[in-house]
Image 1 (cartoon, rainbow, N blue to C red):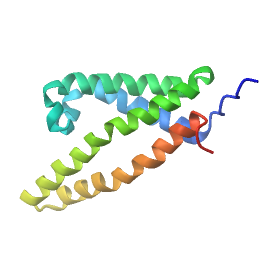
Image 2: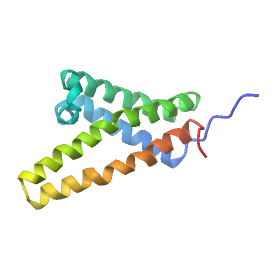
Image 3: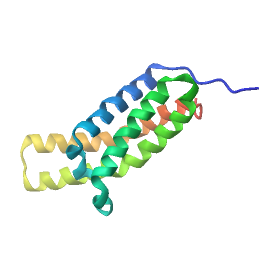
Length: 135
């Protein structure tokens, strides 16, 4: 008996939308994302930014297309876990900037990068729900 494809929910549509916006931005303005590539991977920063942008767009398409939703959900979860080190690096970079520059804007942006880190987990859960892995 075949297992049913999970329904296209609002949170999955939201994740797909987030992936499209982020993916297009990665491809259109890769230089914005290059500084957050973790140091051991800096040699490949442009390629990693472009590949991750293309992967985000591919995951978005797969999430909204029912026959590929399960695979895309798993791929999306893996992608979100894979980019987590870059998000941590963004917080580290901005934390260093705040240490040098104590203006309100720098502190607010740093706070936003820190708050963003735990928000990765609900996104991963949404991806796994799209894959039919969690309820």
